Image 1 (cartoon, rainbow over the protein chains, first blue to last red):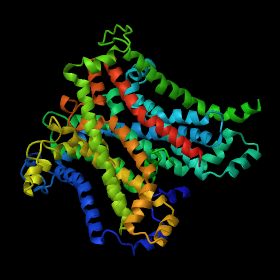
Image 2 (cartoon, one colour):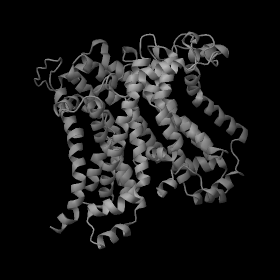
Image 3 (tube, rainbow over the protein chains, first blue to last red):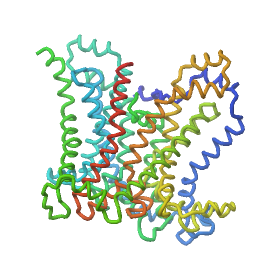
Image 4 (cartoon, rainbow over the protein chains, first blue to last red):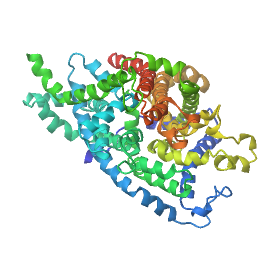
Amino acid sequence: MTTVASAPPTGLEPSPGVRARRRRSFGIGPVIKYALAIIFVLIVLMPAYVLVVTSFKAGNEIGVTGQWNLPTHWTVASWGKAWTALQPAFLRTFQLAIPVALISSLIGAANGFVLSRWRFPGADVVFTLILFGMFIPYQAVMIPLREIVTQINLQPGIPTLIFVHCIYGIPICTLIFRNYYATTVPEDLIEASRMDGAGLLRTFWSIILPISIPGFVVTIIWQFTSAWNDYLFAIFLSNTRNGPITIALNALAGAQSPDYAASMAGALITSLPTLIVYILLGRWFIGGLMAGSVKS
Amino acid sequence: MRRMRQWGPGLLLLSPSLILLAVFVYGLIAWTAKVSFSDEHNARGSKGFVGLENYANLFTNDINDRFQHSLKNLLVFTVVFLVGTMLLGLLWAFLLERGVRGEGFFRTVYLFPMAVSFVASGVVWRWLMNPADGGLNAVFDGFGLDFLKNTWWTNPDWGMAAMALPAVWQLSGYVMALFLAGFRGIPQELREAAAMDGASTYRLYRNVIFPQLTPVALSALIILGHMSMKMFDLIMSVSGAQWLSEVPAVYVWQALLTSDYSKAAAISIILLLLVAVVIVPYLIYTNRAEKSR
């Protein structure tokens, strides 16, 4: 696990020399610079403020007047209501997102390894065809997909969603691992392993996988977040009784006269796992984000 | 035979994925295309071949020009979304690139909406964009900015511009990250050479740095553009499926609810083609760029 301690470079950090030099630089004044930066922080955080404040209000305090104010009486009643409504789906979503993250990462590692090393004829075309799969609008496969998953007797709800997320997660995981292996695994290491008479599978299993942890962290976070936040597959392939949290939240918040306090507590409950991952493991999260633009 | 031994194991490891993608991406697209050429307009499904009739009907024979209305909505949404995210993202990256103390904090805040789902953020944006007196309208009221008060996404002409605001909020940080990586990828020697030549800061950015960022800007535009065309979660969460804010991706869902499979398939295929037009050249371009490196 020592490998995890050193976070991968995201390409976002300035080098120390640049930082020192920049202090003397001119251009826009520092006052304007900081004022702008802080104003944008306030704007970006404004929806978060509304969510938190409203979620701690009692239902009768949700009027037009003073709706931006702090609660006069702080209460967790709305949190309780939201948790009761979301709790089964919340647990189901873990049952969905964790297997998806692990399985797609393993598949991605195997594919990425092959595509980063074995330049078989047409490898580039194959790679491009794989990548295209992550950009398609999934509506274009949804009609037959719904038929197929029933025909192969997949349990509706979470098992079906695990299956489809793993399949449609192959392109992005393959891409992340291909870039990772192409830039971090030295050719000599594989050559040495081959000299020792290890085949491709042996090399992958005992030499490559152990040094792949940073790649795994990126894909696991990426796939966990995608599966957790997904709504499109969920609405087409599950319902409020067997579906993930996004479906449950939409049912809670989308009613004719929504209880805003409970909806916002629900939105926070829904977002907590991915937000915690983002705050604790932000650099790896960004790693996946940057890989999504194809270039390594 | 030696080639087989060289590539065989690799292909073996790769083949399950290739088969799955061949079936579930390309096979199912072909299947959807086939449905779009048939007349399966209800659950009974007659499945006769009708050629391009479903496509023609979408453009010429749709009630109230519903499909064209959804395309118009998508266009307004996409323009506001692209312009908004590109400008904000570039501005934020520029601010951080000029050097601010606590850069990590600003980066973390600007990027945090990316970790949240549209379904969750839609809850709060629906509240903020209250067409009556609540939410942001109440703020405008309080600051005496009454002229800014508006009906947001419920405006029949420009409502989709308001609908793009949550998307701008959510993805500007992503564009910032792309641009920031672009800024930091520019070799220091380039800046130094320009400084030696006595270039002003303005000229340095105008003539040296911004031109270097063109590929980044192109990537960002393409990624965002294709996301915009697929926009579904956000709209379902803010407004639900309804005429005012309907885009093609939502129309597909609505057509399926009425079991009009062929219409849903035809819209899906049009959506796929729209996405392919921007993505395929981009994939080929990046593939070439990588090879020439």
